[in-house]
Image (cartoon, rainbow, N blue to C red; front, side, top):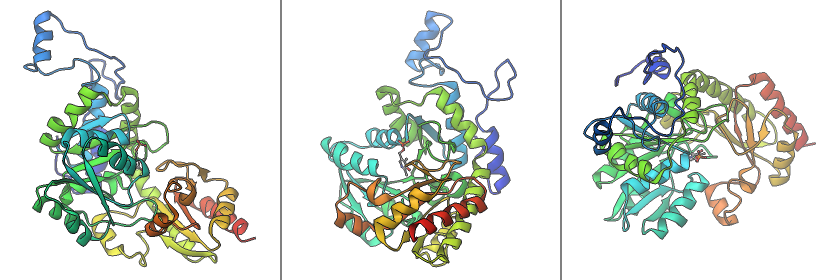
Length: 398
Ligand SMILES: *Cc1c(COP(=O)(O)O)cnc(C)c1O
């Protein structure tokens, strides 16, 4: 595996070529190996593969050539030694915890993580003796204060959803390592095109490939990237035994997605930045959350830690839920859907959807106001998107 890349060109080249192995057919595009098992030439070879003394495919719950190309390509882009692909982003988080933690361990997670991740930690893993504390993402003092002798894992998403708050990955990695714990970063929002947590000291990168890695809203998938010991001995051991493996078809879709990842992210970011700056100027918009704005409290951290500011933005409309819903119902290009990272722009009202189950006080603490709207900026023409948001504003305040 190539493991140094400085320029954007090298990233782009790896995104297209890393991991590909041509078969004797000489195919230009990677093939999809839809097979559940693999044939051995004789009994002795079967025995050798099963014993592990000879490497090679046995069964697609363990390894599959198409899935392997995706894993090697993503590992290369994140700058990691090893990658394990999973059936979904949640399966990647579950496999990380099941592969590396045991009953009695303690996890610290940032408060503003994906809703299903909160439920996984607080409802499911808690039943198996893994306790989780939730702390504010950007408050390093709170992270230090939450450490316990049995803390094994720190888990974050940065930027956060939907308010685009950032965590300083290098600082949290130091806190984790000084305590003998690991730092895992859910990198679904930035992708390796914008942010490479392993280079900043994180131990594990987790992906929902469902989002930008696919980039066209087609398949569910996930991945865990890190060093060989954690990923191959820890996480992979759980995946091959328990079975949340990625399907070869989905792996193929994702590795095709990776080929255009850099280009797409650049375009998502350029449009999001344009719209964030435009929204700031609009009457009725009381606040815009986007790391690219100089007014964002962590703008300088974003400049240091990310290559660009991402394709997600959120904004608050005066008038609360009613105006927000009128806005959402009036736009035509933005689909009302919870997915993000698609070529198609999407729009959500966090207070009544993704964060609807939180108690009103918890929502207020998290900064999810009733007037908040989140947009995942797609790859439509940015002028058309601006006109669409203008249509939303006119309806909201008519
Ligand atoms: C969507 C998402 C997940 C979960 O991924 P699935 O593929 O839906 O299981 C986890 N983390 C983040 C940040 C996400 O956006």
